[in-house]
Length: 400
Image (cartoon, rainbow, N blue to C red; front, side):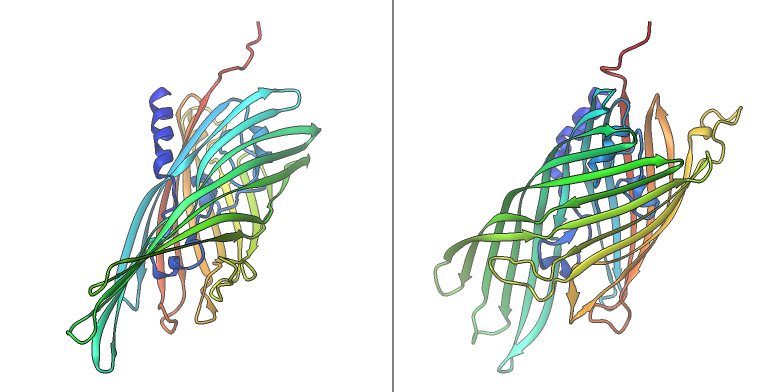
């Protein structure tokens, strides 16, 4: 337990999203993290309307009241993306932060929680060739960094079958972007521009769950609009002049995000779930300006979880093993050439016991977006995720 806690605690230093690696991540605040554990990813990235005693929701703090013992959860995701027009692929892997939930009181189901989670990542490296007055050049564009959040929250059950939760979220992170222009002759001189944008600010996340109908759980959560403080430094380097350093301060909007979901326990062995989420970036201001490449983002997901051998004698380990399938479609908040590249994902996974009440979950996703006629061409995405949830019965009173 101590070794696992130390491992997840140290992962805070790298808890930024690595959710891609294309030129698209140069816009806005980069590619947004999907905010789902491996179990949730395997079920079509449904996160809000599922109550679980071990799998901690990243989007609905009200669900923490379902946790009955101390829980520590962390995850890792590896992704490979192929781009047809570039005849190339890119891969990345990242620790997906950690969550910690502590039960404090049972009659009100009071829980407190903390987390360190990735929000977005800018990760790309590309080049293009062109010419000015017949003189050829090569342009290189690179980006790195992203935004993360530190979360503190609590959940409670004020009425039977009604759980509410709220979390304070502190955002921080820096996005670095480089543009370099190299001419292949002595007529024009090469130049390099480096831009570093730092972000910081606070926001909240509020959630509600209702499980008063037999087998049915309904969930909704909202992240109100947040305005981050932002500061930006420019460094312009020329081969014939000294470097020029300039800076400016401004704000970065994070639009309101809404999640609505539901799950239904069809039988003791079968759970089905669905979710819709949306976030409109079309009016978001970045340093008092709009980016025309940003628009409305949404996601629709459905999934199922099945325990083939649950409570069957002779299958001690298999009775706690779950199989999962799902599907989701989403429209990212970025449009290229006035086209939003809708994504489609097929998901599958498995959940298994580790020791005691601790569990592991594995998810595999295959997705695609665009077509051969689009500016970027068709893109195929393969994503593998694993989450580990460690449970300890600390602070739980034992009956005599």
